[in-house]
Image (cartoon, rainbow, N blue to C red):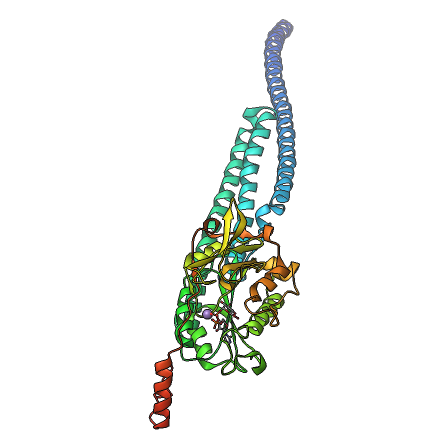
Length: 459
Ligand code: UGA
Ligand code: MN
């Protein structure tokens, strides 16, 4: 019973074992299958991830390379365009503009204009770079890929351009302020005396007007009239030479108060060269040493490269139309025109046609090589300073021949330049201030009586 029981038990155990084994085998097989599946899934995920990583890296590499190449291309283009433009700015012809005057106004505008020109140059560089970069980069490679970079680049350059525009405006404002300050300063300096300023224009040639003058009752009247004519003239420098051993207060004050640009000199005509009592009015030439001294000053002090212009001899008692000065400014060599109340006629001077002198309208001294009055010609500074630096007025010249002996040394008839509408307009009058005989006589009598006109009152 026990054995059978045991046998029975063995059988049961075996049976149970078999059952268990089959069951466990099934379970294990299932687990294994599940593991294999999950392993496969993992491997797949890892593989996908790895592939993704590799692909994205490759993409990044491509992107980096193309960005680098674009930057390199841009740099090359920018460098080239900048260097080209810097050359352009350096060679800017505006920089070579020769300044014609050295006036305060001229100097300010020269400095500031130079800076303006630099800014204009830089502005052009920026503008040029924008257009060049845009066009060249667009042509290069994939447009979509470069679009963003290009936009930022353009915005950057446009901002830079605006900055230059702003500083240019600022500079122009500063220039205006400076000019105003210069004007105020000049008028303050001159204000004490008269508050007048010389008329200046850096673009116009200068006129160097030479006037001999001497002391007499009518001197101030003549000089006041003349100075007030000259106040209307632009770019005029008045070289006034007193026939005296010193520069008088009367002339000095008159010049300062006029506000004109001037040089005040003096040289006395020695007695043997002057008219004595009983001598004919025109026994001696007048104002010869004075004009020669003025020419010496001009030759030593005027730089024709900086200050182009003409020389004109103005007697202190003639009458001058302001238009005459604009005529003589145009003279390149030696310009001529008629003079009213001269040469014993209503007017005398050159007869002209088609820009040439064809003859002379003259009564007195028709045999003169150049029958032209002192007030009837102007000489270009280049001729007087550079080409004929030795020519002066000859005090030994025959009476009435002062002008021809001077002009003969400077030019020939065919070189003369007719001015004043082919010599058909009269713009100067050889007026003469009459000596005030009554006043002279009366004053002498009053001096004798000890009751002269108040000497502290200037006339
Ligand atoms: C004429 C001419 O127009 C003058 O250019 C020329 O010098 C003169 O003749 C001459 O024969 O020498 P006119 O009216 O007769 O002129 O002479 P002024 O006007 O009396 O004198 C001409 C200039 O020389 C004036 O500016 C006058 O102030 C000056 N002058 C005159 C002197 O400097 N010193 C004198 O002793 C006299
Ligand atoms: Mn005169």
